Structures are given as C-alpha cells and as structure tokens.
Length: 428
Image (cartoon, rainbow, N blue to C red):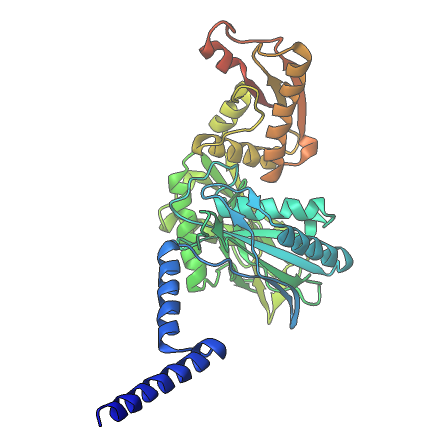
C-alpha cells in the first residue's frame, strides 16, 4: 500500500524534471533561472562602466532633405585642447564633405565648435570652440575645399559628452547652406569685430528710414549696443570709428555735412548714454550706392572699425616682442596676455594696411648649427601660421632664422638658454 503512492510521487517528479530539461536546456527557452543569470551578468557589466561615460553620438551632415554623411562616430577632443582626434571613418566623412563642396561652389559650410567653461584655452583664438572649428576647417582646406566656402563659429556648452577614454565628443557641428546671391541676399547682420575678436554678432541690425538720421533699434540691437559700450569701457586703449552711409537719392535735412555723418553721430550718442567714453569714438560719413533697402528702410548702413590708440600703436611698433619656446620644440604656447597682443596686432594691421610683421627665429646652442638654423625657421613659421589663422594675411608676414648665432644671454645656464629660444616679432 505504501509502495504504490511513492511510485506515483516519483513518477510526477521525474515528469516535471523531464519537462524542465526539454524546455530549458534542449530547446534553449528562457527560464526563470536563466533570466536571473542574465540580469546578474548585466548588472555586473554595468557596474564596471563609468557612470559619466557616454556612447559616441553620430556625425550627421544634411543638405536640405538629403543626408550627405551619417556615421556612428564623431570628432573627439582632449579637454582643453583643439587638436581633433579623427577615426578613419571620420576622415572619410570629412573627405566626402570636401568632395561635395568642391563640386558645389554654391554651397557653404558652417562649422561650430563647442567648449566648456572649465576648459583652458591655450590657442590663438578667443575660445576653444573657434580653435576646434578652425582645426577641422584646415583639414577640409588640405582636402581641397576653398577657404571661402567655410565659415566658423563657436558656442559654450558646459555639458559636452565624455567618452570612456576621457575624450570630449559632440564638440563640433557642421551645417551646409546655399551661398547667398544678390537675389537671395538677406539683410546684413550687426557684426562688430576688434581684430580677431567678435564683440557683437546679432541677426538684426540698425535701421534708418530714407532721408532720416534717427535710427530704429530693436531690443536685440539695443542689447548689442550695451555690449559694445561695455567693451569700450573694458578696453580704454581702443578707439571705435563709426562711419555712416547714405544714398545719393536721400535728402540731408540735418545740420551735418552729410546724412551719413548724422547717422554715425546718432549711434555715438547712443553709446555715450550707455556709458562709453566720448573720446574713444570718432565718426564719419560716406556715399554708398549699395545699401540694403527694403520698404524705404535702410538696414545697416554703418561701418564699425576698432582701432588701437596712438599710445598702443607706439607700444606695438617701438620694439620687437619675444615669444619663447621649449628646448628643441617649435610649438607656441599661448596665454591670455599673448592672445591680447596678437589681437592688438591684427587690429593695428587692419588700421594700417601698409604695415607688416617680421618674425625671426632663434635657438640656444644645443645641437649643431644646421639643425638650429632649421629649428629657428620652424619656430618663425609656427608663429606665422598662428597669425594667419586669426586673419592676418600671409603676405604681410615675413619669416627668417638666425639659429644659434644671435643669443641675447649666455648659453652656459638654463635661464640663458631659455631666453635664447625665441622668435622676435617686430611690427613695422
């Protein structure tokens, strides 16, 4: 009597085990035990990954409704650095972009570089974003893209994604646009630059009714003028020239010699009301037949030119400035002071088109004479390259090398060697 129930229970246990083995092992279906293992494995894997690391965002470039480039990769940068890290896939993407621009001269490409507030800028540019955009621009130029088809811009982004290897990604965007023609030309933006530095850049602009001197100022333009006035207050070594333009069909109902001068004076008064020093602003006026005119309203109609003061001009041209290098190196380290100096030189050259820059490279006596002669020229050419990148024409820059032949201090001490490793930059 006892044996039969035991046999029945054993048969049930055997049946359950057989079903489990068939379903979970032979057919490889998901059973509760396997789900547990998968979750455990996933949790273990996730716990090893850095919580701040992110997957590489895709690099996508579109031309209207058409996708030109779409790859699961992107440009990467070391924090506080502007040298791009390009995978083979990204290099191919840039090559494809360059090929498109070469065959479509009606297209332009805007590159926008991004940077974080905590990053250190050691480049010639006003910020790392501009330097990063320009680095990609130079890659495209090497690939055959005309310089005029590429523009650069920058924007601060304190939340740039960080890859597992510590590199920053998604620090660059590229936008294709149709080149504007006289028929599609939009109203001019309000852009004021001081050398290589953009002081204001606004989509709107000052407007003047025909034959009127009093401007119409939108809220954005008013804010831009506030920024401009503050910039003048922060840079007392600067002068701003405002030149007003006018059409030959306009009537001058003011007491000024011409309507352009009256318009420039109105903007000078606006800046003075915002706190700018009147001695930093000069005005002028000129006839300009190609002003942007819509519905009897002129948009823009003003030329803004920053100039350095006479005292600063004397500082820039009185003697050469020494730029120093590490031993055996031709890489120029840039700090805020040097960046300001280069900006001032750019402004001065814009103000004095006949002026030029002479760069002479020097070394210490480490190594042989021929090697040092070459190294001195490399250093001079490095400075020339950096000056060209901020907009100084290469034909305004002359380079030479004296190698180790003209030390300014003894080469018997580390301090003397350091003083001799230099490029003398003379503004003439």
